[in-house]
Image (tube, rainbow, N blue to C red; front, side):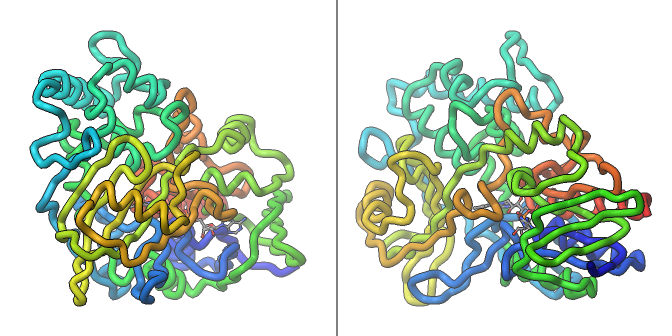
Length: 427
Ligand SMILES: Cc1cc2nc3c(=O)[nH]c(=O)nc-3n(C[C@H](O)[C@H](O)[C@H](O)COP(=O)(O)OP(=O)(O)OC[C@H]3O[C@@H](n4cnc5c(N)ncnc54)[C@H](O)[C@@H]3O)c2cc1C
């Protein structure tokens, strides 16, 4: 049994922020991480084809992500502005169109649905659970919401494409509010989401987490999945393999799907247990595809299947383009299969050639068990920060249930700093 003041579990951005704040308040911190690396769902990895390092987890930050921006400057990193969208195409009826998502005879119904979504998104942002027609905005799945809109297929496909970068899970299970909340960034427009993905961190978000942890001086224990958390009268005891760790308090900087692997003694309160048992439904895949013949800045949305969202984000020195692409992890989608990816890319960029592709499977990853947080319809409250207050000497921190900016890296930093403050009050 080895002792320290505070144990932080999880070396993602939330854990890094907690460790930094606790260390600066004079605590001896031990940070225990399951993987052999820091950063969690921020993951800089060499691209399979050529070794160039790319973000295989989260990447974009917004103009209002002030804590992250300050940390980037403080730890000697920089920001790369995202390439603007200079060419917008929609896949409809098997062909690409540059004049809009809907066919001419569907434009009126299309515009009506866009206006409805915009109104609903703005009402949700104001805290309303229903729109002016008495229709639910929360507690309803994305599939049920789309059915209620009864819009033309191309409109449905368009919303489905933006869903892969907002709600990102099973249409029938995940809450429509995930989509509406993302639309609310730009007056309720689904397309507006991209305008706020303004920058990426150079070299990468995982490097930022690593530098924050190094600056904290925390004792870092890698490749050590924590299995058990026991509260004792005076503190906590944690088990990771053969090792046992004791401290006066701990921060579990773990996402909601990651908490499922832990055993607690005594058990956590019922609301937390129930939220952990349900988890979140984020099930996107993110691919990087190196292509020849795609103009950088091209954004294509698909036909409701396979790769539904693809953006040619970076032009390389050799003239090839790096396309970032999203879809849902579900039957029929095979993001690991080069032939499948070629077929999908061929639909979205018919005159271009796939040179290589790569990805990370976050859904099958035992220390992630999903992509970014996406609340299940009817269970949104389980992810409220109010449900994640400390119990005994255990504080909780993750972007998944942050009080602000949940789902973003910024939310992880906020949650980590909040949990550190809570621990400082407890000890
Ligand atoms: C594909 C993808 C794209 C995304 N895009 C964006 C984006 O563009 N912008 C944005 O802001 N956000 C994005 N996100 C979300 C963002 O990555 C997350 O919100 C953020 O990384 C969560 O940080 P966290 O510290 O809360 O959790 P995590 O990063 O998941 O950190 C938790 C850590 O705990 C470790 N762990 C798990 N179990 C155990 C255990 N038993 N014992 C010890 N350690 C354990 C994990 O290995 C991990 O290191 C994206 C996420 C994904 C997957």
